[in-house]
Amino acid sequence: MSDRMARCSGRVAGRALFLAARLAVLVAAAGASAGEPDRASEAIAKYREMLDDANPAEFDEMRGAQLWKTPRGPRQASLERCDLGKGPGVVKGVYAELPRLFADSGRVQDLESRLISCMTNLQGIPEGDIVAKPFSTDAKRSDIETLVAYVVGQSRGVTMNVTLRDPAEHTAYALGERLFYYRAGPYDFSCATCHSQNGRRIRLQDLPNLTTKLGAQRAYTTWPAYRVSQGLFRSFQWRLNDCFRQQRFPEPVYASDATIALTLFIAVNAGGARYNGPGIKR
Amino acid sequence: MWIGRHFALIGIVLAGACAAALARAQDSAPDPLFEQMLRRDFRAKGIASLDRLDQDEVQKLCTEARDRLAVAEQARVLREQLAKIVWPADGRFLGDWRAGEKLAQDGRGMTWTDRVGSSVGGSCYACHQLSATEIAHGTIGPSLLHLGRDRGASPEIQKYVYGHIYNAKAYNLCSYMPRFGVSGALTEQQIKDLVALLLDPESPVNRD
Image (cartoon, rainbow over all chains, first blue to last red; front, side):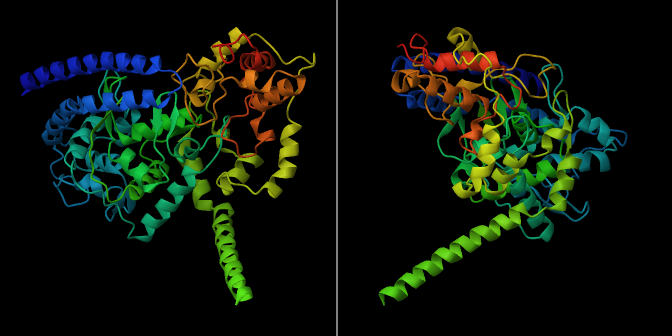
């Protein structure tokens, strides 16, 4: 298995490098025709299509699948009894229905907060150890991001169906919506500053309009994702964290109610689309 | 019949206005749950202190109106924002466009990964097209390509551009553009350098 993974990793990384070089050529070619700003976007779209053929996130998915069934923590238990919403041990299709209210915790939870519940309850790993460094770095991969890769991959092709049934879910959605439009900080930014208009970019990066069904669907169904520029797989909590950083806000607490509420707001708006993650991003 | 139809129309318009007003009232009502969530679920990191979550009047009004505030409601606050602009004591608005181009390219600053006292860029290319040669420009703001060529560089235009960078909210209350002078992100000299970038006939904005 590890041999196969190493080969896969090498192949995929090589391909990513090749494609990055291709992007430079495509964008440069697009730049040659000044006055047609859409050419750059077209070139990047073409680049993404090529990337879809070989997503290094497959590697994270495989490692996550191993991690899922490996006995770990003080209780030396695997996560195979973890309930992500469809009963203990069911992984298939769960991501397409998260976040949701969980009766046992009494909380609306996204995938990552639910993984924390399972790691603490089943494996006995202290929560503090999990949330201290939840995001991968070049030096150390995050267990939870790796598990995320496996779980979301098991919802590929499943229709997004996050619905508001319980009053707690309605409340969380309303809080998430409110946070989305909340302007603050030294630059007066809200999520909506970048994500409430169609066809806008920051530099060359396309910005999804998360206030429309189509925009929310395109964005949500392609995250979590492998980030080529960082060479790392990134979870949805990471995506929100880095948005708030660039929004010049203080840091959102990992897997906090605020981040889950915002996730719920976007996930509900993305309803009806086919989940297509893990994605691959620039 | 004619009157009837118009009353119906007025009714629909009124109903729409009521719905909008209700939605706004809902948004602007202090929501203790939301306030608790903000205070509990964010933490200070590096230079990004928790007081950044406190809204000033502009941020509050524009949040409540979802950035579509009626013109009549803007007048007083616009005047107050205009009064926040500190105009150059020497009365000059044009700096060095070369320094301005560097600043326009620089998108760093003010995040929790930036250090105290580290340089802050103007982030102009993040949202605006400025020169024909830099194709990696954003499109959240309008294109400023050829601004000086099209508008000239009269003292009035210079002052307007300076004021707009210093405090965009003095001209358009719910503008997406940061208030670079008010927030202390950019110095007077840096704003002058950006004015020069936009208006100098020799800068890449106007010469291509």
